[in-house]
Amino acid sequence: MRVGASSGPIPVGCVGAGTGAVTGGIKGGLGSASEILETGLTVTALVAVNSLGSVISPATGLLWKVHLEVDGEFGLLGRRAVKLPAAASPDPSSNTTSGAPLHKRSVTFLTGDK
Image (cartoon, rainbow, N blue to C red):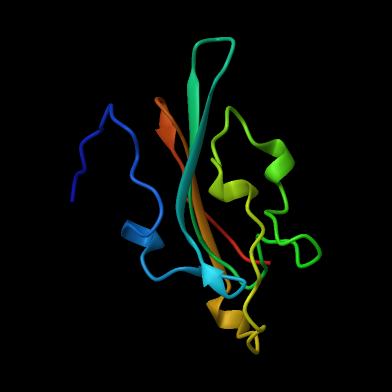
């Protein structure tokens, strides 16, 4: 199946590969980031996160990397502390995070396991 390119925003959250994803007992999902290099080349990463580890610090209730926020991308919800649900027994086979670093010249698909 061939999929056409889009010039609009990439849907993120509970869509596509992010549907049903869970990370550390809370909703995971599909996310993206991009950077325009000095050469003019745009590099984009598209990642579906369904991991055993949590993206939330149990000490603060905030995202581990909230200090790396760029241009308010997390919004007010990203700065609101949350209470984590009780930890479930981990099933290593459910620990999957898949990413696709993309640029205009090639596409490579990677799957990483911790």
